[in-house]
Length: 209
Image (cartoon, rainbow, N blue to C red):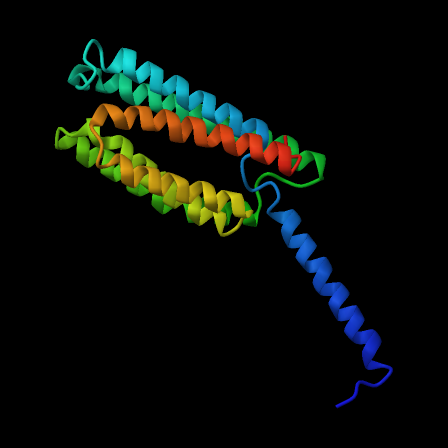
């Protein structure tokens, strides 16, 4: 069936509306991931956490995590987590303000809901390994759970976020078959190196410093 002259402008208008909707959706997810600077800083915090864990929580042993240093371990990584979340919040707040948006939104709530199961699983596994006396094996589980959380966030964000999540999942799976002390250095490679590489890529390719 041929389109009438009146239908053609309507089709063009519909295509234009779809284009505007797509651009709006892309802008709404533009700041739903780490900015370049945030990625770099989160990576640095993680590397500092690894070094403190190795030379403080492990003490003089390169293989055994001292049982009396578990509070130190918890303090180190809760501090790393707090510093990372605060960094992400401040960078997102700056980016959102530059385009007249709010940090907390419906999209932000959905992202938190999507990431929550992965982080919850990480917490539960940590408690289980602690009670079982296997806390030195926690590193691979952290990577897998964090990767799953990031993969969920990637459904609402740009493609590199999903790639980052899968990188953590695969690295964590490999780490589970490595000696415990190797897992600690894998933490430096993943939580440190992966985040730094992501930050550099995001800043250079998307101009989101």
